[in-house]
Length: 371
View 1: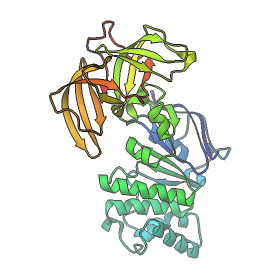
View 2: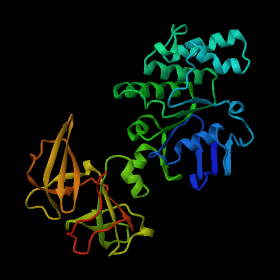
View 3: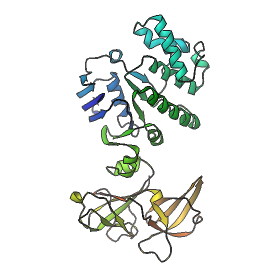
View 4: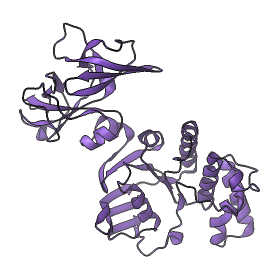
């Protein structure tokens, strides 16, 4: 284990920005802190970097408490959201800055700078002014500067947020490949779930200063720990629902708002909600299909909109009390058509007790919707 946060807390007056955060990162991992604005992810990164000091808890690097080490003494590489390049220095001098501040010999500085610029495809750019570079090139200079010191840990605070969409996709692909090639441990901060999915070995989802769940992108998408993670990670239909029947193996029959009775499998048998329990049902858009007139258990609605997106067409379907999203690869109904929605046979629906809930009659408007 290279980095561990042990019940770290950071307060700013009456606001708790990071609340008893515990997190362990293995050598060579690419881990992302993901969450909405104000969830504490950047503060957590600054605590690791040494720009903030925890009020409680410990930040451990290879088992050593970093409490008394300055940011410079920690030796971590960092790439900021605004790149933090020095406008009065050229590209070479910007990349060399960290090495020179450590008193590195001139020959070593020159070799490291050339190697770092080559790694980010900026070979020959050393004499250029940073103001003359594009946003993508400036981002690469900032990354080259962080890599030049050969850091044991690379910290990245939303470094792609100022790039256009096409350049962001290209740059994050190159970033992951480079980090993996060099064997660097990286901790990345973003609010963009697509970015987190593309880059990360594991993702730590945060809300209000707390860690809600950590796992691989697949684990977070398929097995979210709670309603917040379900709604924040990936596209989600969140339906108010009520348990009608529960089996000893953890399988449920759940009544949705709108009256449909759908099966839920894979619940923890030791913590199966009792019949009558209200909560929220998670159904991913690709887990829904359009059913025929003779099929039982369907949720009836009207197609409000449809959008073609390459291999998949996305539909918005108005059902009693909410709007659901459906993703289907086949050509489906047109806008305004009356439809019947059913889970696909391989769907993995999830039920979260105690959060929302369908009305007793199953037909009145409820909370939820496509998130």
